[in-house]
Each structure stands twice: as structure tokens, then as C-alpha cells.
Image 1 (cartoon, rainbow, N blue to C red):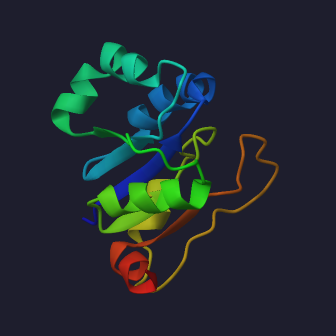
Image 2: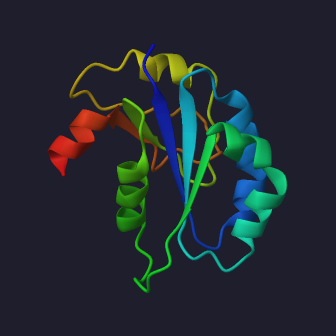
Length: 143
């Protein structure tokens, strides 16, 4: 069974993660995890994670990282860092306002080598842009 890492970045969007993160962690199946990159979020993100998700952190279902350097935030840089921290065979970018939809994990496990996955966009008002999946090998090949 292929492992999947969902990669989420956050800076100043705790209010969205409070709505999506519990849902997304509950949807994770065996051999799935979620990397959360805290890009110096000024809104209490770190405290929220450590106060509410100790079980998920201890099992490795949730992997929390925080950038401490002074780079200006750019979403492409943040997403690349999160993907480099991922360990799954398949990587999927999941923005902070996105939820894991039914059937997504099955579709990602069926992803072929060098194939990109863009979810179907059909009336999804939870945010669809920024969702992209590919194998870790493809991510590293593309640089």
C-alpha cells in the first residue's frame, strides 16, 4: 500500500485550519500522514497544534514544523519546503482551506509514476486551487 503525505502550509490562517485540520486528520487512512509547515504564523498556530493534537503528533499522523528564518512569505517556497519534509511515496498539496474529499486517498494511491493529479472541480466551494498531487520521486526530479 502506497504511503501518502498531505502537505499544508500556514501563515496567519489559523482560523481556516481550525475548520479543516480536524476533518483532514480524521480522514487519514493507514500509511497516510500530514506535514504542517508553520511559516512564522503570528496567530497562535503553534499553541493550537500542541494544545489540541498531541495524540496525532505522537503517532506521527501529524508532523509539525516551524520556519524560524526571516524570509518573506511566498507560497511556492513554503510549499516546496513542506514537500521536502514529506516522507510519503505520493505527495499532495493541501492548502489550509482545503478538505480531503471522499475518494481522494484511493485516487492518489492509484497515481502512476510521473503522473500529476488535479482533483475534479465540480462545484467545490471549499477551495480547489492549489491542490496538486504527484509521486515524491517526480517532485525531486522536477526540483
